[in-house]
Length: 207
Image 1 (cartoon, rainbow, N blue to C red):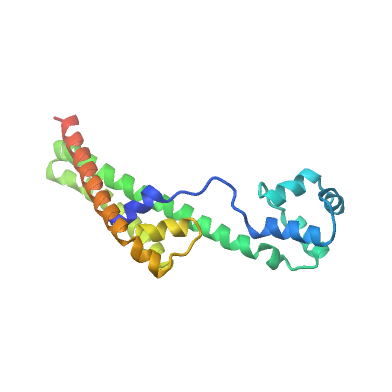
Image 2: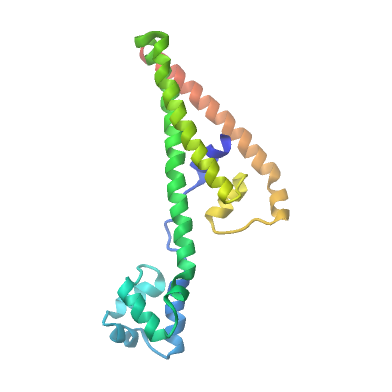
């Protein structure tokens, strides 16, 4: 559970544009044919700025232009997109997992906060609400655990490396072992303090 909180804290989708295969493929193939950006733009009936945006990763060619590029460069669409598909799948995986992590954390927080008011207004039957919220949080946690299993992620360092599209070797994993353990303990303590604080706040609000 604590590792799931780590995902919540440290997973983010990088805002800068990643250097992906398609922009490199367009530039290299253009240069291979000895074409300037203006000349390539003329052949594709687009502006030079559009070509520049493709090559810098600020935008992507649509399917029609992908087919034109494929024919002009004499390479398959798969070869143009191969690297980008992997990157996009990775980012999509992060986006989905981040949502589950947020849901898990919010539900746990609401569960702790709702204990006091629920018991105050509905007696012990009021605990049904916090338990329901905890179950929703557990469901989100299961989703995250499945994601971690699919990508063979166990520690904070591995999660961060996956986020940055890197692979941690065995030596680096051992070097990060102590840091991962400390991070895990600190995260658990902060989580317990936060949950306890929210529970006390809930009781205080209805006293």
